[in-house]
Amino acid sequence: MIFSVKTLSGLFAIALLGFSCQMQPETDTVEHMVSTVSHPEWSKNAVMYEVNVRQFTPEGTFNAFAEHLPRLKELGVDILWFMPVTPIGEVERKGTLGSYYSVKDYTGINPEFGTKEDFQNLVNQIHEMGMYVIIDWVANHTAWDHPWTQTNPEFFYTDEDGNFTPPHNTDWSDVIQLDYTNHDLWDAMIAEMRYWLEEVNIDGFRCDVAYLVPTEFWNRARRELEGVKPVFMLAEADHPELMEHAFNAGYSWVSHHAMNRIAQGEDDVSALDNYFFEENQGNYPIGTYKINFISNHDENSWAGTVFDRLGDGMEAMAVLANTVPGMFLLYNGQEAALDKMLEFFEKDEIDWSDLKYQEFYQTLFQLKKDNRALWNGLAGGPIERVHTNDDKSIFAFTREKEGDKVFVVLNLSATAKTVNFNNGNFSGRYTELFEKTEVEITETFSLDMEPWTYRLYYKTS
Image 1 (cartoon, rainbow, N blue to C red):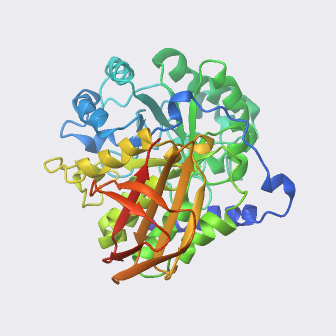
Image 2 (tube, helix red, strand yellow):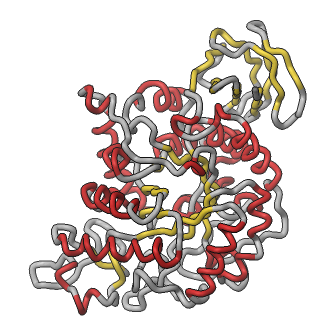
């Protein structure tokens, strides 16, 4: 939930500062932290898809969205993350329709989208097709007109004059800050979350600005939700402590911003080396899923489209994000070459007339399912760098698991390159994913690569 570029930059600066402090492996405890979180079996090779119901169709309803389910199933999507489906506050509302993240009722349905019965039917359809549902959960704040402001005002922070306040150091003027020093709030919030598991049978939650809510709350929530059914929990955060006991997955913001900088000529491939092979060693608890992406609702609405940020490097960065360790997230419309920043508080629908990248992503997602080297967490293979004659421009690596293997070569520069490989475990017979050609790769193998091009070689046992 980010409402302006200014706020986005400020919060990420705070978040990344906290993360960078935690990234220094000063003790063995940090270096060897192991997640105690159980991953649902179905998540091991899953791909996630973010759904913005308001903008998805001209109608902006659950029923209209349901018509896209067969296409999304064919695309290879496994987990559908729905941005908040709850009623939106009217007091201090931003824009005409308001922000999805201004929650007026945690167990209600936004009438803009349909009814509870409509959403229940949609969840049932998704499950029948072998896919899963998580919903956005906004635990840090509510709308100004949430019923708790009347029934439980003690759940909220107040200023010295006893007035409710927006979250501190933000411009989120349409919401007010909850106070987690009150443990009765913990009881109430977890009860609201349980409702969606017990009554609607969803499969988990994507938790908005999770790092602004105490880790101890999330740890308790995870234990109690697991008592209802196995759940998948995604934190909008990259803070290791959240992943130790509470969340299956967190955002890979550091690698994402590195991709943006490289595409814009502000950095080179060494930024990825720093993340994957140096600074990031031992930071996330072992077994945690990192969520990799080139867009999401915040990036699209506030930072720019994938074409604005990545330019000619968009496809190469998508290949990168789909093949490094972690789970890939696709924001709705990317498969249709979404080339506009969607309005956040108004109706601004996606144009589905040209599914330009449907086959591109479908090809990547199918390889993810078939090749164990690319599976998520400990189910997949570790990433190993392959060094070249130009490691500042070429990012090459392998991943291998139980006989399955990928060898990925990316020219992440605006200059054509002849690539020679200096060392690494890359030799073997492969198929190139997009060209569908077989190739024998030896130690003397070389490639001529145009700017921002990629090769994805794979073999499956």
